[in-house]
Amino acid sequence: MVIQAAPDNPTLSEPELVECVRAGEDRCYDIFVRQFGAKVLAVAKRYLRSEADAADCFQDTFVAAFDSIDRFEQRSSLSTWIRSITVNQCLMRIRAASRRKEDSIDDLLPQFDSQGKRMAAYEPTHSSDAVVLIDKSQTKALVRGKIDELPDDYRMTLLLRDIDGYTTQETADILGISVNAVKTRLHRARSALKALLEPELEHWT
Amino acid sequence: MLTCKQFDAFMLDYLEHELPFSDQVSCWLHLKMCRDCPKFVQQYQQTIALGKQAFEDPDGPVPESVPEDLINAAIAHQRRSDSNR
Image (cartoon, rainbow over all chains, first blue to last red; front, side, top):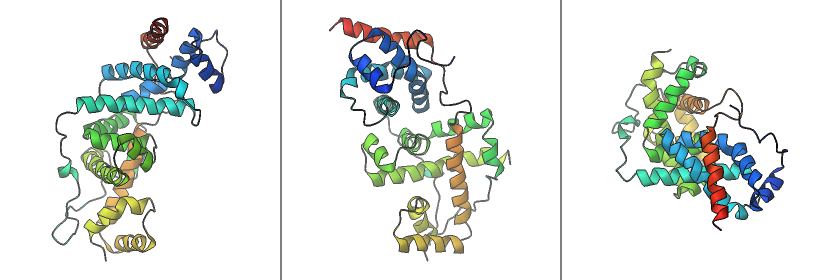
């Protein structure tokens, strides 16, 4: 099913849609949710590990969006604005659930000897075919599964920076950490993901 | 010359060209001289590409269908909220 504006409603420009929702017009709630629902759900599913959490996040995102639309200043697109609300809602859920100590990823990070020399002999297990293989849905699912194995702090940083395309500064603002902390987490997350993917991709090259 | 460990600490900024010129050159020289780090960098960059592609949608900008009950629940919540004001 492709989400579209309700057929009995004409297409509205973004400013018209914002004004219409602010005015509390019933039909505009419908247009708004249908217009952005698919993206909200996609982001929620990306950040949250369970379908139920993604569905709850979907509801919370629209509640938050309707509550705060009076403060939407149209400096960004509605799509960008609602994506940031969705990410924040996801973060709140993840933080609420992450009271336990994060798993360590130290075993997945590069090791160096006392001279600072890289210890593992990295053979090129990712052949150029690996990037081609990702077109297969099975491979995409495997990579998504490996990203899901990362501890939340690293997974969130990787998703924000590498997948959703936020800048380092934006990621730092969203996560409430320093730019340097974002860089450290991102590098460790990428290195760990690389280590997690190596044995899997080796079979396909 | 940088050690592999020192290069690893610079690596993210090096790949994003955010280092001062002298450090950028030091990293570049390390990659020219080191046996292992170029392979690591290659695989690291492929990992980034694999991650991006894993979330790419081949069918266009709307990757998900939304269950109608989810849409209706969100709209109903807002209507209830309006009527309570």
